[in-house]
Length: 86
Image 1 (tube, rainbow, N blue to C red):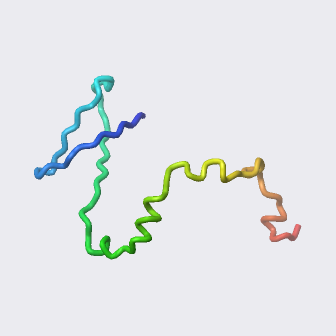
Image 2: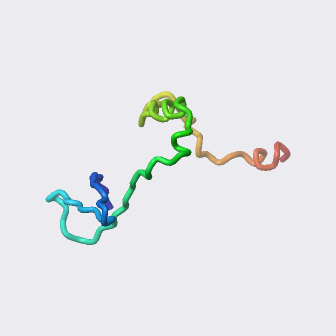
Image 3: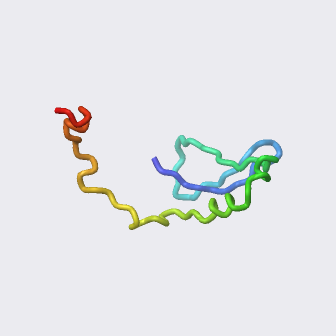
């Protein structure tokens, strides 16, 4: 299964129109619609610092800053499960 991302508008009839690239062959497909809801009163009450923190996130910003032990997925010893008592 593959995915492509396209932008479109939802019209007043609650319909969308999509034009797929020529490389896409005719066959069955699933469509997922992600849309932003209208701003509500509670959205306006969120402090500005929350918005700043949210917008400063970036995919991959912690790359090479986190490491995992080579034995991370190794089985734990029996004394771990027995509370330190064999």
